[in-house]
Length: 67
Image (cartoon, rainbow, N blue to C red; front, top):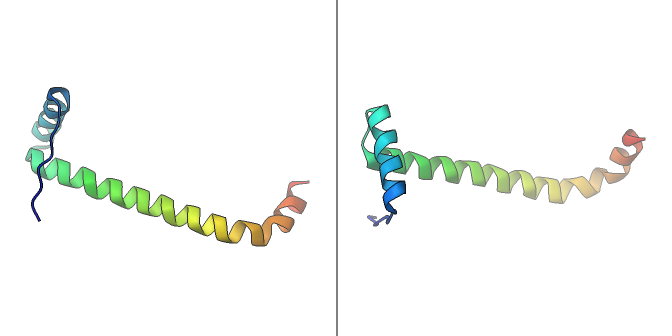
């Protein structure tokens, strides 16, 4: 699915410079940034979900270890 990404002039210029440095298209750099963001936030969400569900289970033991 195609989409339009609207950037301001500073964002466009930063993306253009990054693409030139990496010898890639602006589209490739932007798509990689989106993939990196999704991967990072998905991992963070998973860690948060595990911590929320498992931390209470071990709270007593962790408290004892902290003494």
